[in-house]
Length: 144
Ligand SMILES: CC(C)(COP(=O)(O)OP(=O)(O)OC[C@H]1O[C@@H](n2cnc3c(N)ncnc32)[C@H](O)[C@@H]1OP(=O)(O)O)[C@@H](O)C(=O)NCCC(=O)NCCS
Image 1 (cartoon, rainbow, N blue to C red):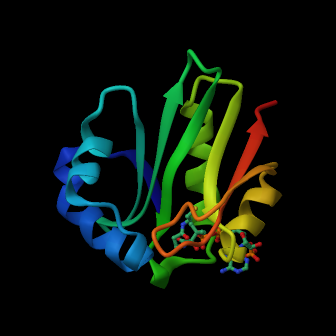
Image 2 (tube, rainbow, N blue to C red):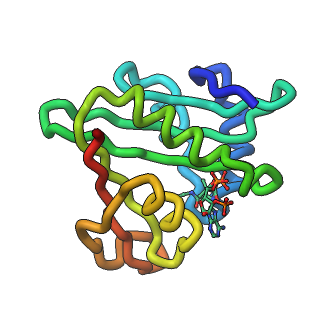
């Protein structure tokens, strides 16, 4: 498995990966184009045997002093092999800001466990943040 910078050429693969990973939370097509083309975004893909098996994107907001992890997903067949952690770390290291934030579904215990292990702490709850009314947990990490 290698972690590489993604580009618009990965649009089709990202679409498939998104629907495999996120189902009802999959991003709309235009958001996928944006994440693969906006100049400031950090976009990383995990590749195995020429296939995209994971993806993470970071959105730096230097004027706010923090960045958002905008998305992170690993294909279900490849989960629990350390790929999510590797993508998260690679994305953080390329984000040139001291604080990093992300939002996660309250029920997404696996992702929350990963983020806590990586030093994220809950800083806020956004009520009914997701389309089905579930709350979003805002987590934050100060880079050392
Ligand atoms: C969240 C996600 C990116 C994690 O990717 P991953 O490659 O499976 O994660 P890792 O293998 O690096 O996991 C690292 C640790 O996090 C924790 N963890 C990850 N997934 C877990 C799960 N489903 N249940 C419990 N703990 C979990 C474990 O402690 C794990 O270490 P271990 O496997 O040695 O026990 C992946 O499950 C995913 O794509 N889920 C669907 C999309 C999603 O929910 N994305 C996050 C939105 S905020």
